[in-house]
Length: 344
Image (cartoon, rainbow, N blue to C red; front, side):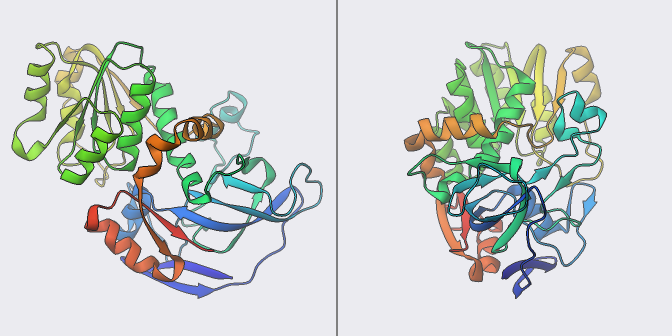
């Protein structure tokens, strides 16, 4: 089978590998489409995701969809040709965190696309049967790659618990950011600002429901939002960028007693944070680690609101063009939103 391997910083090659048989309880799937995620870009461009360095060669990609090829012993409910989205996190279901329902904090977590566990930029993958989410008839497999990022967004909102009528600001209008904007509006947010330096991303944020967008190059977004909110601040800030000062802008923009959610992953191993404003305002800060079984709700939202979310996918590239695909995303070229790598 074909495999897209990251072999050095900013270098991906397509090579070949054997296809192992699925173990008992596993399903072998043929991957047909994989979205490029922001954390893939950290690995590609920086050689690490936060404080986790890359170990070459490694296979990225954790926003996949495809079809079932065969099943291992003991698997029921799946047949060859069934279409599904694939969950990249494999949990032990035995540790204290799994027993408490916080599976994304599993003490024995495996996540496909990390150094020790190859991701989905390859033709075939063997997965536990419980890691497959069946797709409704007619859903485009490329569109289904947005289930994983939408699940992350829904997990961030589960942490923040936004209430109808609240105000919010989203820092960063990349794919996760604009999905967050849309999800906030669907939960009944009264007003949502998006802060983003790239014009085509600000436009996408407006298309997905932002009430106002701000270019941080044109002035301090914190001052602007305080003024726009009647010097109250916002109820909730969600930082999907965690760069260029947004970590502390998120603290600065919320009202006393407000909430801040950090969905993004900063490049720095130790990111600076304004402790005293956070303390004085008695803020509640939440961090987000991927998702926790929100895939079915993500699928439901994407299926119900296809016309709203489908325009986010702006580009497709075949696996053979994966190097050029990553270069395009890193350079923010050609108005790129979400780029999907196809393996059909």
